[in-house]
Amino acid sequence: MPRPNIDEDSFDKINFVIDSWTTGCEAPWYVYIETMKPAALEAFIVLISFGWADVVRGAFRPKGLGRRTGKKKGKWGKYKPGFPEVGNTLGKSLPFAEQLDDYIKWSNGFKTLWRIDNLMQAAFFMWLVADVAEDFAYNWTSPLYDSYWCQEGPPTGFSFHNTTEPTKSAYVWHKHAYANKDWLRPFPFWGFDGGRTGPDPCSIGAAVSFSPFMGAPPPTVCRVKVHNPSTGQIYDESESRTPDADGTFRIPVHFKSQDDQGFEVRTYHEPDWAKVGMGAIIGTADKAT
Image 1: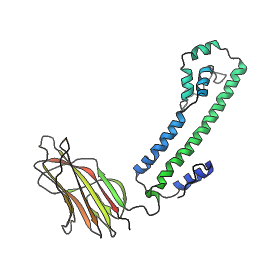
Image 2 (image 1 turned 135 degrees about the horizontal axis):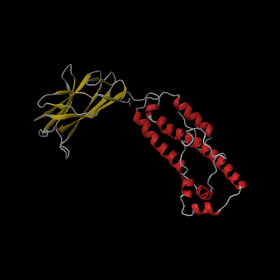
Image 3 (image 1 turned 180 degrees about the horizontal axis):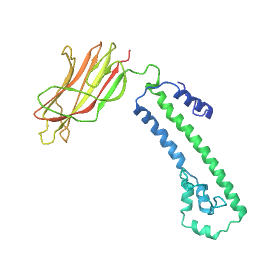
Image 4 (image 1 turned 45 degrees about the vertical axis):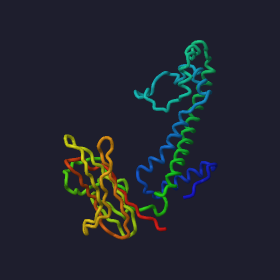
């Protein structure tokens, strides 16, 4: 999707944002977050930025410029939401601001001018919010829809992960599950504790952690394998690696497939009970060269 140049007018930017959000995009949720963070930070900085004119207004603005009747409209009148005006607040907090308010006696005519200035500043702020919202939407959607997730023909495959560590017995090959889906666009395919590679060439990678169980000695032998449950063919098997300082093993396996076949991940450890489970499994179709 072509983007307008950075110096194009607002109309082109808005059209780009509308076209982007009306175009299908199946990016994982974390891609939306990652592409949003820089745009959100820039918008926040613009909103809290201020100039010396705002500080001067805060220091010299007289008190009591609200409604002439002094009455609040309804019981919720005092709960008025609004974005903090940093420059105005800073000006009111200056050491001499309180003395200025007592020293300068503004006439009714000047107070009217201050009220007009308040209305003008409110209008300028709303215009700023609209401009910041437009830039935020454009700055967010630009990298999002430049990513391959939002282009025609995004990669197929899956990504799953685990957030729990079930306790498993030793000296047994356990069938391993990855329960939490990040994204899935088969093929290849994964379904909780087993998958299929699909008709096209693909790459499968998985990792599993082994942690000491409370009261039991830490594992000394840890293995992970990925195999075909129908034929028993082992695609990859990894031996133990050096544990981390806390005694945790993190072991990866990986294989490439050229045709349609099933696969499972299995784990083995000894000499005693251990917590097995944290990790992820990712499969992606290989791009044609």
